[in-house]
Picture 1 (cartoon, rainbow, N blue to C red):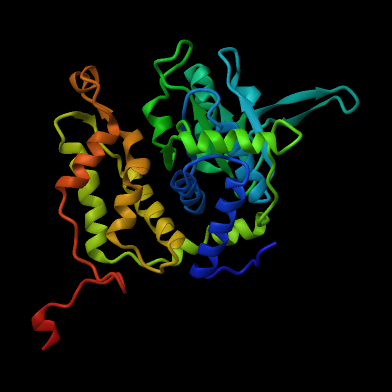
Picture 2 (spheres, rainbow, N blue to C red; picture 1 turned 120 degrees about the horizontal axis):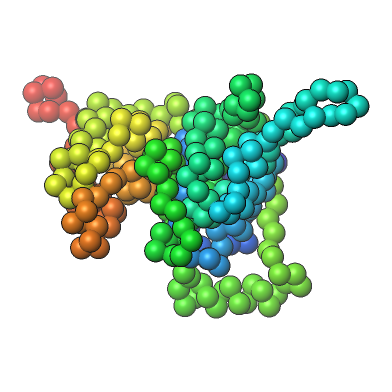
Length: 335
């Protein structure tokens, strides 16, 4: 196991080791896995959208194992009830009393598999858990484990039998990303790995434990974000609200989440300060899913990510010192 006390360089090394361990089981783009790690470091939840068979479940399980966390999987179906997620009170004949039986949401890493196959009422059962770290059943509040991370998967909404995630639900995910199909080299590697093992599913080992993960999640709080970069984050989010192709832009919650996950990206780079590239690198995974497009833009096939890309192209990037993350000194200040 790696050490408990984490400086920014130590945290970066730990995160790299976690990603390396997951890549030993999952054939995926390293950048996508780093985005997921950034979401975890920022105490966020992750939404993976892909067609079936692209490794979403294996990725979520591998993250839980590599992080040394308790894992639970909830298969969302059209007949899944909220109590199937949160748990319920059961009458016990021996004591003639009701006792609470926790549902599968009571784990450190919860895989909400194919979340958009369940009706909105059941999807909303995760809302309180994701936002508050607790669930309320029959008026009683129950705290969830810490850390608590939801990795939800969904099929593209064009597929039959899927329900569009409500805007409020999407907004609670720190990151939305996609594993996608492997390229030619990745496909060959997938086959070679299967040929070299005698069981269907690859496995990973633990890199850290629960206390180390909690320590890691404290590290981004020490990262500096200078004033011009704070303005830049705000400008990017406001630009989504004034874009004519967007009905609903990034919410104030989304602004805070971009700030938080940008600090996590800096940690992954081993820096104690955020630079514009950190914000630009994570902007689409952190913001695109929060947008509601104008009906005409949707009909034309415009993607939410395309809107974020255009916003990144139009909003002025602040000049920052790449070595310190501070504003460059003006000539008058140097005299």
